Amino acid sequence: MTDPTTRVLRLLGLFQTRALWTSEELAQRLGVTTRSIRRDIERLRELGYPVRASSGAGGGYQLGAGGALPPLLLAEDEAVAVAVCLRLAAGGTVAGVTDSAVRTLAKLDQVMPAAAREQVAALHESTVTVGTARAVVDPGVLMAAARACRDRLRATLEYVDRAGTGSTRRIEPAKLVAVSHRWYLLAFDLDRDDWRSFRLDRARALDVGTLPNAPREVPDPAEYITTSVTRSPYRFVATARVRMSVEELSERVSPLAGQVRELGEGWCELVTGGESLDYLAAELVMLGTQIEVLDPPELVQHLEVVRTRLSP
Image (tube, rainbow, N blue to C red; front, side):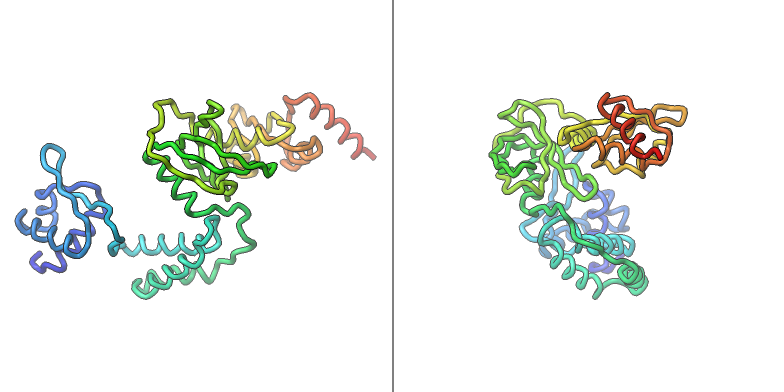
């Protein structure tokens, strides 16, 4: 490959597919000498791409983050994927994203190949967004939470609970968890000396500090969050055996509504919460299959009351 411009573009594409490359690997992939690779690296740097070099064992060239966002090279399928995600983001759960998503889609549409543009257009023409997101997250809070989790830094959270009571929490963020249409933050609450989950749409501000998190074992994020949202907010928590496959029951019950566990021989365990026994009874009956309520005893008794109501 002798054309410098073509070679630099290919080099940039390689950097965006893998984190670290040696000069020998790049030279072999592009069919040139390592001296040519060094010149091409300098051209990328002149164009604003922060290419880092490290020496020694395990060293090589790496595309880093700079002060400005340089152009990205996207394959056709990658461009389609980005456009699809932007289309969904226009009606998503992060505040202020809609306008940015529309502008970015317009830019992509100008440069996308005809075949890719047709795929995206078909999706757009076939998709209707109904309603608006109920749990909208401040993008600044979301980005701050992501940075705190990544860098393992302590933070101060201004939070409003489900009762509308505000508080300031000193936390050690661990993981972000997206459940259906909501974002949750799993963090260690320093004032309560225990792990807590926080709905990010209820966060008013998140100030990330410089002190590192203390070394501690992090609970399984998905299990902790689903347990938290299906049990702790409710007055009643029901446990039942359900005659259904785990795949079918998982499709019928949202992760925000209940936890599903396979028991074998066609049975699953369902743990779900509700503010009233009538709500729990209706939720179980609507599954339309054989159910054995294990807990609480009040629900077992209430189901008899419901049966009596429905008797002719």
